Every structure is written in C-alpha cells, then in structure tokens.
Amino acid sequence: MTKATVEEVPELDLEALPERQESATAERAYRKRQLAVAFRLFARYGFDEGVAGHITARDPEFPNRFWVNPYAVHFSRIKVSDLLLLDENGKVVEGTRRSNKAAFSIHSTIHEAREDVVAVAHAHSIHGRAWSALSRPLDPIIQEACAFHNDHVLFDEYKGLVLERDEGVRIAARLGSKRAAILRHHGLLTVGRTVGEAAWWFITMDRACQMQLLAEAAGTPRLMTEEEATLAARQFGNANMARNNFQLMEELLIEQEPDVLD
Image (cartoon, rainbow, N blue to C red):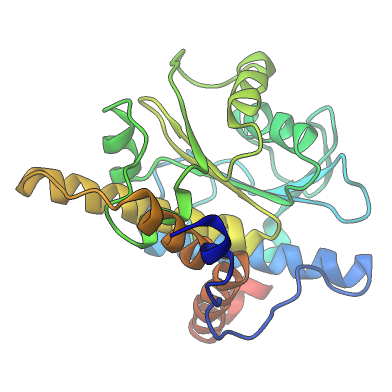
C-alpha cells in the first residue's frame, strides 16, 4: 500500500467533536470537567497507585499555567472543585490543597516544550510498568496498538522519583513531537490536544502493553506489515476517534457519579 493509498483510507464514521469551546471561560470549564472525569476513569481502570500519578490540562487563558490533581487525594474521589492551578514556578495560584512536586517536574517541561499539547497523562499502571521493564517500544501486533506506531518513544533512563526539572526536561526532549513515551522502570506518559485525547491514549497504550505481554507469553506474535500498521495507525490513531471514545465513557461516569462535577 503506497502512501497515497493510505491517505485515501476513509476515517471512521464518527461525529466530529471540536477541540476547543468558543470562549476561554467555557474552555476552562470543559477542560476541568474532563480532567476530573479522567481521574475517576483512571481509578476504575486501576491506574491509581497510592499518591502517584497525575494528569494536567493547560489553562486556556494563561498558557504557562496548568490544572492538576491535588496531592494525596485518591483518583476516585477527585471533583472539579479539588483541582489546582499551578503557575510556571509550581506555585498553587488557585485551590486550597498542596501539589505533587513530581507532577510539576514532569508536566511543566512538556507543556513548555509542546505548544500543541493541552493535556499530559502519567500514571503507574500495572501493565504499563511491566512492559516498561522490558525497555522496548511496543510492536504493531494489534490494530489498536498501532495508534502508537512510529508515534511513541522509549525514555531509557531511570533515576528514581522525578523531583527535579532537569529530568523533566530530558523526558520532554526525548518525547519530541510524539504522542507517548514509555518510561523505563516507571510507567507510561501520553499527551493530547484535549484532556480526552490524552486520557484515551493512556488507556489504549496500557491495554496495548497488556495485549503484547499476553501475546508474548503465549508465543511469538505475528507483526503487522508496515503497510498494515500504517493503515491501522491512520484509523486507530485518529484524534477525533479518541475524543469520541472518551466522551462515551465521560457521559457514563457523570451519570453514575454526578458529584464529580461539584
């Protein structure tokens, strides 16, 4: 399949969801709502690990600031009103709780390096950490895993908790313009132009790690050809599909846990 042929492949028949709301005020409320929902979803998927893990959303009016979860509040209990706004120095400028130093060290550098990134998700998921111990990128063995085909990196360095911005700078540099990173001995990190995108990519990537672990435990997985992987990447790496998938889960969670909007 040539490049021209791949570009002719139709995208999935999904409603085109906007990346942004019409005003900064509406966009801020939208990002904060999705952020709180994303934490609840991460708790449902078992991505919580004590006080570890964070998702951030750039503020639409003050792009050098971002919203983040407060330190030591379980993902399953986070509400919109709990979210903190951090400035470029890591100071809490809105909110009453303390922040996570590792969240600022990792996320602030990525937000600085990537103007296109609205949200960054990082958590210590079981399958993501297990795969990270192998110090390998994911292979194109499942169509959904191809969302990361030629679009993720391996950060092959480990120095314990990321408490200094210097390491965050190295992670951001290694990530470059890619969608995701596997942090050796640490976990996964994904980015997106919306909170929904970043959260969905994280869920998808953790599942991809799980599927490859299962496949390799059973035998030797058959790799997709470059043409097959490129085709699947176009279809399953579609940002609008990610937004639609997240919205589906968002609507269900809000219906079941309406206090998330408090």
